[in-house]
Image 1 (cartoon, one colour):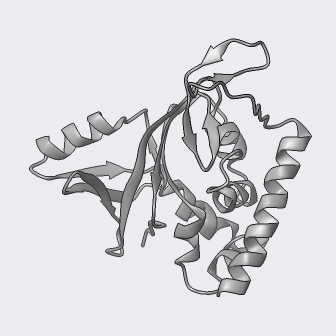
Image 2 (cartoon, rainbow, N blue to C red):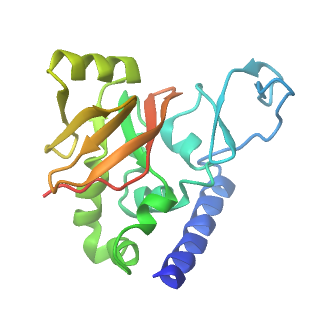
Image 3 (cartoon, rainbow, N blue to C red):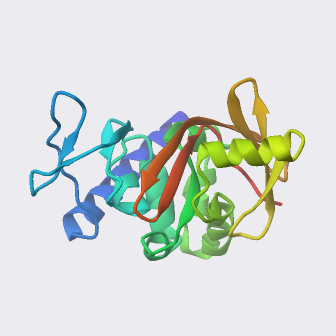
Length: 205
């Protein structure tokens, strides 16, 4: 499994690099000492770091995700499913974004199989299960959980429910198969929504 995931991660990194080079996505690497990212026009923009890269609130979900070293597998999967244009659109969208390590938890060969053209429908189903319409910040989600007596049911773009609850101070997501993902980094705001980083791939029925 380790060898297969390593090969796939290398392929995903090359796909991300190709997207960046094509001009579909851009990356500025100038950072000031106080953590403020500097754009090409030298105007400071407050950012947070994900996967070693600054996430710019003025950029869309796909543009930012392409720069995260922790999300190369997700970006490659989104590209293979043909969802890059959708997630670059107006939205807004809330994306629960599994890391490379989350995808590596899947059974050996799963990712490589899913990105095959013949399995595009299944890949799309899984990816859209991680997307909720609207911009749902962590405070909003925790408010929904409290109002729901400890649980909040989120209707995903895929159409199936994803259940949010709390485990201590952390938000967890329970999928239709009983799998549990933890939000490890919340409120990464984008121009067209918000990303919450998760440690597990959620799976619909």
